[in-house]
Amino acid sequence: MVSALLLAKSIETGSHKGIRQMFGFHFVQKGLVSKEDGRFFSDLDDRRQTGDYDDFVNYDEVVASQLFIRADGFVKRMIELIESQRIS
Image 1 (cartoon, rainbow, N blue to C red):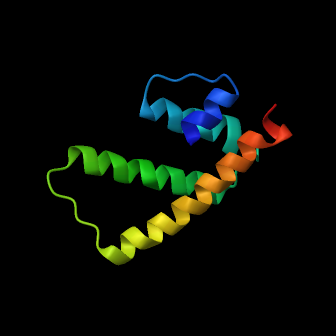
Image 2: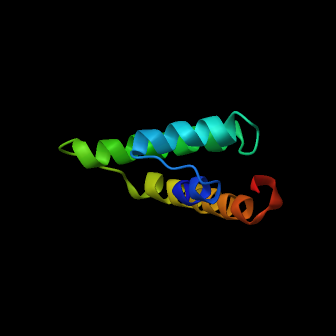
């Protein structure tokens, strides 16, 4: 969703790190996205990095459920932002 948000503003990046940086710069720092959502996205990206490159990563069902609920809300807010006139 963050990639879609960036593309909606014609912001292209070549890496996960670039997506994270451009999201922070263009949306969080400018107040279009809350700092809480910015931190949540950074946390998810850290977890993705860990899951991709560490040998053994375990998340229990409670943690995964909590992350899923928060991610669902995050995705909905990003869709609303894409559809809003604020990013035009």
